[in-house]
Image (cartoon, rainbow, N blue to C red; front, side, top):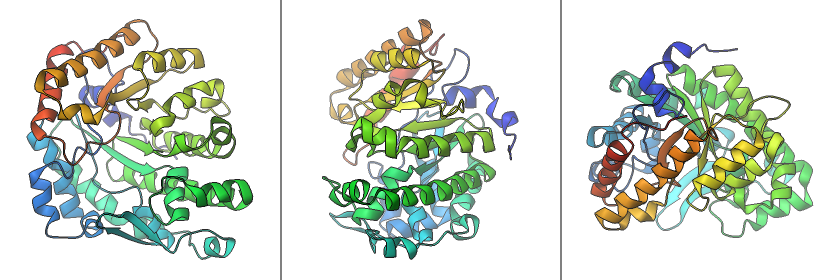
Length: 372
């Protein structure tokens, strides 16, 4: 089932916003560009709980659009959370002060897994589709709308641990002691996430992003054996079903994706169009790995979000450094393109004016866009 979105994806500014277009305007957007660093977000957030905000199409669309009113960004990413699908699976999601997300009951046994349900995604998570459609109707011309989901492993860690974790003990206990149960959970999350992302494209998403933030907490061997085949199948299936570009973010594991070499494409099925690289990996190194792996992809990233707390000239210098590395990689034919972004999400203490400085520097120093 190909949704034939080519008529949308081929719009020049949309393609550039995905790092897939011809030289010109250098695309820029930021992970968590809608959020706690913006006063207008905090004003709205003070009136409702986080999950309530995610479930309100009107308010989620408003929050999604807020940063585009303030900044010259090329894309909006729908406001939601990677754990929202867990509610449709049967877990309760709360965000306690100082505790982060909490999911109950945790899935740490076969009995707990059996109590999960295979949801009708459109029926139970349709409010996300409604938020996308509403955002699309209000999005300025030439701006891309990005839908997203969490990858099976990262979402699975929250489901198993019951929330955030530093050691991932319960998760690794399942990986090593009950690999069949772990595989079953990954497959369930794969199937639900495929439905969830396809729904988002039907609602108006021009591109998709899969967040696998905690992938780097497994060894490369364990990751390649237990996680990547399921994730790659998910990515390839969604690409084939929707026809829209897909970005994959693997947190601190960005380089290991490329070190998988030919396995980065499963059975000749392309898994992703853009690899989002965190700040711990040099773009030039990631670009060389792309070439060695024989992949025709773009890179996204990779400003350290903490760099935005520095003085203006330091922020601008950091932006220029990334643009220069990306331009060299594009000119050398190592990568297909580049999207300027942070290496992970913007932080609550980020000064809004620093985001403006970064975007302004992209517009000035990257005036001719990444080339190839």
